[in-house]
Length: 618
Image (tube, rainbow, N blue to C red; front, side, top):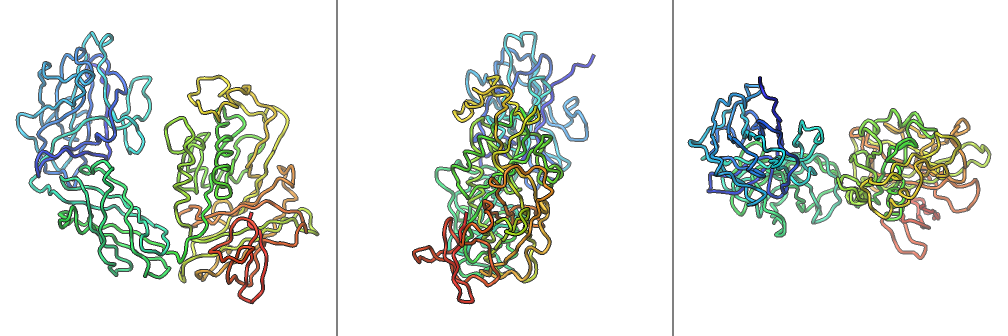
């Protein structure tokens, strides 16, 4: 009878280098920088672990494998160990390895739990990797003593940052847990010492200056760690002067084929504000000409160069519900993010399947980006937990994601004002002014979307009570901020809900014609909207409303910038923040100091027609 096996397959792109000589290097989907720990115990019988070399791999195809290394925990449970290679022709290649098999003397097994070392198994003869791809792995057989002496599989300490991971068939291990700690010693006379390639970097928004940060993924394709690089950026086929970059000394050394995110300073002080087709070439590595001359030695992208930076605000669209047992942490997160970032953070708590749901969010593009509750999307680019952020730790880390979002330059400044019409009591007059900071005469892939938020929403009945699983304890969230829900009952009936969208206008693609050509640097574009809310059945209190305006990129779907303002009563003040179409010449503080853009509070605006106006930015 054929024995069932535990199968672990890894297919990722994170790898490591521990150079033996100029033509040899250790390679795998796990690196020492990821750390290693036991992620489960092998079952009794035969268990297989493998990494896969894809077909026609540009660096590895044709190389030879001389050895394999990995961790083994508690060798007393092991009755047999084999290292092998097999082509990908077979669905279960390890049943009949057709390239190489190496039996391991059990006395040679290194016990990781005792010695803390990776054990290395050398093939009797080096084995060539075929162009068709191959599995490289080992089979460990666990004997009858497995229950008393379990042998563990070791994977990366954290799954964060990895693209693929270990998947187990054990009942307690149906989850993604990181890369397996397995490497192969590969050699090839074509392996160079100093070589690197960049990856395409998409569209990046930068402001003019001498040290503009271009974010690039760099991959070491030679055997030597990268310490310095020389690079040339080309804008619309015109090369800028070559620049040098030294990787930070406190960083872990780069490793063979492992992508590294670097921020390269670019001199864009002399370039005009515009959109450019950009190409980045790596010319030198460690002071030597880049030995990688493949087509991938250059990377492409687009640079949108701004005349000056705009005031960036970041939007978190949270998905929640009164029935969602773990969603109370989103309430805490919104409160903390507002306190930390003030008006540069805009929170929207979209409810689903409860009395506060609006149909537009249930069928929105942004909701399709993330599944399950609680969940959130930042600027319609980053999907994350509203409290933990992109971290896997059960602590408040969403502020780190907002900080990264706010560090990205915005293409335009936005101001917004909202006031009830003095004659039509159910009509809300919204005025938006958008000022772009670059020239673009051919395309304008932007539009404005409007969202009406209400704070302090309450209701009666079971559908309005918040289900609270934190009351049961053992949630794993031990932050002091969660204590209020730990101490609260399982059903909270007196809760007031904030940041609730009760209406919106063109949530997905924005309002047609709200942004128009030409986009001229520094020239404001006014837009006004009369919002009739007479049929809105969710609205509870007109004094607790705010309007959010989103500047959407209609091509990528991302939020380029945003603004938020509290709704004002009709005729409450002689100071207005509703934009006009007279054009803006300059902004000043109330005491006459010039500003690059409006700041929070009272501002003086001098128009191009010579008039002066006071505006309030909320």
